[in-house]
Length: 95
Image (cartoon, rainbow, N blue to C red; front, side):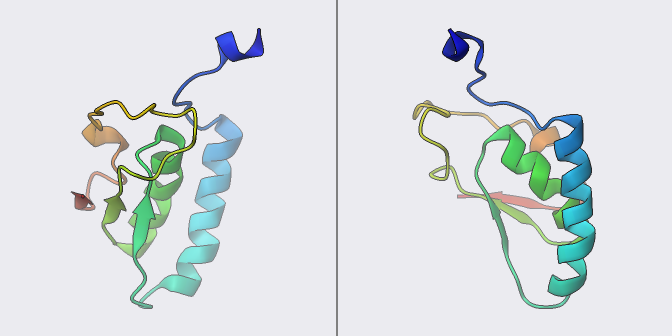
């Protein structure tokens, strides 16, 4: 029964969005000018988590379509909406 209500690609909760902002502030300070890369799965909550960090670091978010959870996208061809691809002012590369 719980499975019927489960989303294949859930968004972050309000708490999750707040936590991603705190993570971006904390981790962003450590990673600034480190040469780090930011890579995300195409899953909505992963992209939403990466958005604040991409903005803080002024880095592109590399979206790797092979990174997803079992039970997630189910191997379907996906189209990632631009508004989910990290910060709109940050270029995004998919591969």
